[in-house]
Image (cartoon, rainbow over all chains, first blue to last red; front, side, top):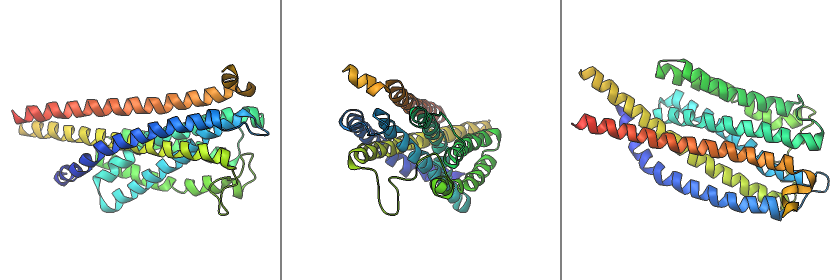
Length: 241
Length: 52
């Protein structure tokens, strides 16, 4: 417990300027991406201006999976090396990932209504992303349900690791099953099939989203470190009394 | 300008998608920064009390 208090100094010294830098980058890229996606990119031949929803839906989807990968990776590090900072990272990633997963589902439904004619369909892609969203909620609920923080951290880590299998399922769902959701157009073995005028704003918004996630993750980790230190001080004070 | 908001007739869909994104990401940002400031203040207060 005492060693925990020592290491994060270096992290905090890094996290403060890093989160500001990532936040600034996110803001700048968001501005460029919005102009590109909403104004410069043309409407698409079949779906018209609804194609612009892609520029928020796809980055949200990528980030929802990236956040889970961070959560899973951090959980693994915590279980194997017992590094508390890894647990802090996993804990901080969860609400962010949940938010992105929610946005993926919601913007996807909004996109689906005019293009597919339906808000929702139980195909493998949509169902597995819904499971991802529920796993985020389950992770957060599990951690808050356990009073002992060490137990909560360990249970959460195991839960997160078990759910990692969902990531390749989501990715390959459009290949393994016949889905209404279209197959991959960007992250493909043979390269993107998406044309440049749409790929460009998509990538800008995606990098903006990654920068935003990094800024929010670092800020969330800082909050959690401060909270744990404060609780440790209170405990020490109570023990002295 | 009104063409921009109409989005070829799909304005409701496009703007609700972007609006929801702004709400969620904006909300997460405000919440995270707010919590960071709060926890930092609380810790500083406790550290000052501990020194006394």
